[in-house]
Length: 134
Image (cartoon, rainbow, N blue to C red; front, side, top):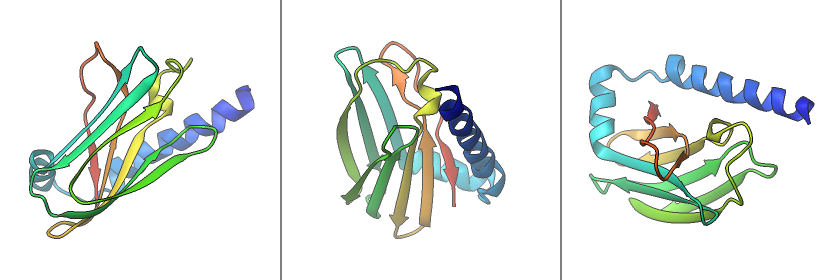
């Protein structure tokens, strides 16, 4: 069990570092992206995660969502600028929600290819920040 978790945690850590250092977008760009894209992933005690995405500019044509860290990676494709997806999760992961980041790959008319990443949070916790990359 520990052998599976160590590579997973390493992969997540490297992903975060990659997003931070290879993102390439400056603060002004990131502020525009923060104002344009809304993303939230909330865990409810009844056993599911509600993931919502909205592009305020309505210029997203294709969005691929992945939930990493699962035994089988969850991936789903959406057309358009908005979606709400319910994903069953029996309970809170033993090592916390950080091991299951939500990653979106977005094709946007004005911004090109954009990546968004956030973490799942419990219903009674504040919404985590979103990491943006190009």
